[in-house]
Image (tube, rainbow, N blue to C red; front, side, top):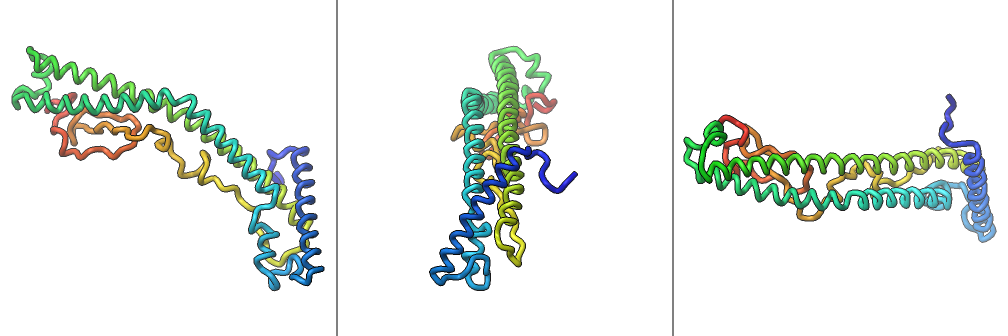
Amino acid sequence: MGTQPLRVGPLTRRRLVRWARRDAEAVRARGAEASVRGGPAFGDPDDDPHNSDRDYGGEPTPTVAALQARANAYAHREEQRFLARCRRDLAEQHEVSQALAADLDAYDERLDALTPADRAAARIAEGEGVAFEEVRRLRRRIAARNARSEQLGARIHARFTAARLRATRHFDRSDEKIAVYWGAYLRALPPRPVRVQAPALRRADSLAGRETSVDRWHPAGAVQPFAGGPATGGPTTNGPTLAAPPSPTTRPATDPGSFDA
């Protein structure tokens, strides 16, 4: 294996070399004009470091700027495609989250209305009367909505991951193109005593950014269901949400599925 990227084809490589020579020729022309006007010659960092850094990558060359714009546009299209495919799922997940939070509050109220002896799991499962029927109905509804929230979350995350991988792959391929272009660009320019690294594409503001999270696209004001358990109390819910979970002290120390309920 050589040092050059292997995924850049020969036709693309020749086109990048041609663009590099074109950009280098433009830089040399600017340097010649500066010399005629009595300014610092191109490539002399002691005379004008700012000008030298600009020509060698302080500011992107037209080709690098074009590759950056194309990668940003591709990532934006992937983001819009993700939103178009998941808009209905995101809206439904928001509704399920709100309904689940309301059911959890209602479940707490029904448990508080029962006597301590009636809160046992066996008593709730076999008890007769409107109060027990209401608790059992809420438990079934909470379980169903929690399962639906997890299903929607898994589908949203799968589509988001696929879109992000496609955007990241496009940025990676663009970085490989820049590596080929930059080598030809430096070879076509006067030598510089300090080695100049190839410019890297900016990804932070795009779908391919390392800090990008799917939470960014969740509907505003989404409520996170309480993620409880035997140790913290409350029905367990695991759907992906935005807001911070409420304090465990706001829920009874009982779990509908535990023997202490």
